Amino acid sequence: MGQINYVTEEGLKKLQEELHYLKTKERPSISAQIAEARDKGDLSENAEYDAAKEAQGLLEMKIAKMEELLSNTRIVDESQLDTSRVYILCKVTIKNVKTGAKMSYTLVPENEADLKTGRISVNSPIAKGLLGKEVGDVTDVVVPSGTMKFEILEISR
Image (tube, rainbow, N blue to C red):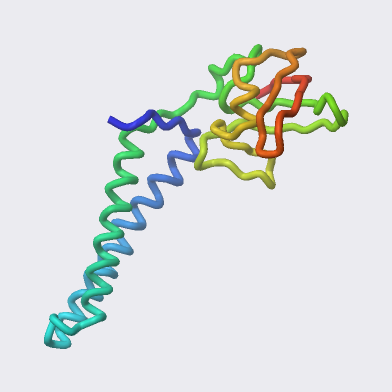
């Protein structure tokens, strides 16, 4: 069994829609390409057939991986989140102790991260340094450029 993957309801819906698309649109499309290439004759020297078969293998691997991911997926109930500490789906406002710069991030599952909207992966270095901390805590966060100190100013949903 793989590792548990936590998602929001919205994230789960996106995963299910992508899997449905792969099975109902991509799979039949590749099967049609294989049939078309097979109809062209000699399979031993048919590059189109080989390419289509390879594409089919890659698609089936992707479908199997998504099905495994979905089987280990759990929805996070946002209404049950405790905001006394930093956890997944919390919005946390932090201050860089050295520069005084303030930032707000929402910690989300890996596949829902989007830095442009302030949604960072719970597996990112900053998130890992913040998890479990409380308002007022100062924490060292190891980032590629070194170590930064952040003070936790606010935690909300």
